[in-house]
Image 1 (cartoon, rainbow, N blue to C red):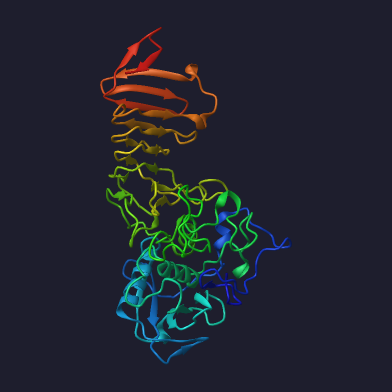
Image 2 (tube, rainbow, N blue to C red; image 1 turned 45 degrees about the vertical axis):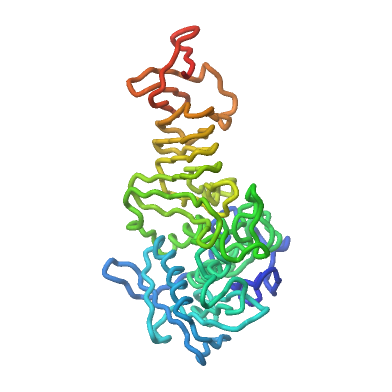
Length: 428
């Protein structure tokens, strides 16, 4: 809902500005990532000792004017939250952001402005008039100079969304920079094909958070402090890495990603960029949870922007970036759904009646460590018609193996009982 003619602004609340919206004469894209690519990028000409591009930024001081913006004073809290926003980009791309005290040296100039009733933020992408200059509305929804800019809140969305423009990203609902429009999107409030135009898939959407959440949407009318995207999401990561390179030094150890178990400041949706190690998605609580290990496909299909792992009733969770492998998942004491990926997974349901879901094309050698802790179920419905003739069974020292097509599942510590023949086993 841009007010700015170059379609790189974020409107205040639910107001509509003078953006160019889809019409039948505008071509849509068959490539998900094209829909948010402005087509330009920063080229600073500077690198650090690690070979990463250095992009310098400057906080404008009162009285300075850059383009259309005359800045107010940035508080230390606001600066700190902007630096956290920059860090979310450093985590995913080969860029180091460095603050400077001279605007002439900066590729990005951040202006805090009073634009009450107009927009939340505006940023001029590379290659446009006044490129690199952005304005953040101190009177905008969710912006508070002493608090309220926490990750996952509406003010923090403004920071990462506008910095995305500054780095060369566009909206999926308009033609900024000549970018095509996401199929099925007819205005800035359209979720589009397979509901891919949402903040949980791209921070460049105007539909923030996860509006198709089975528990319903969190909107600014309910809260401005939590429940939205708090990082660049899967589609953003793909486009930014294409422009600036992937940060292959981030999260290379054995990392654990814990699902949030409460709503409040600091609850948000994040996309996991993990460059190595043996990693785990985990929930330790007592509610029902979905733990989905599949990465975003980046195709125009369900899962194109990622598969959402979350706890029922909680407005936060994870998706997994394309190319990232999270090997293991552990549920809590509720009735969890755990979805395997194409790696060799170790899956633990925990207490409760859990469902282990295996998807065609995601086969591997997977281990279920605690089958039978509750009334557990195996869901193979994605394979369509599948019968006993498709299965093979084996007793092993570790437990009971079930194999079919490209998939083998070890039920660790589980025996088998023979009924009709040696080839016909029941889990026991």
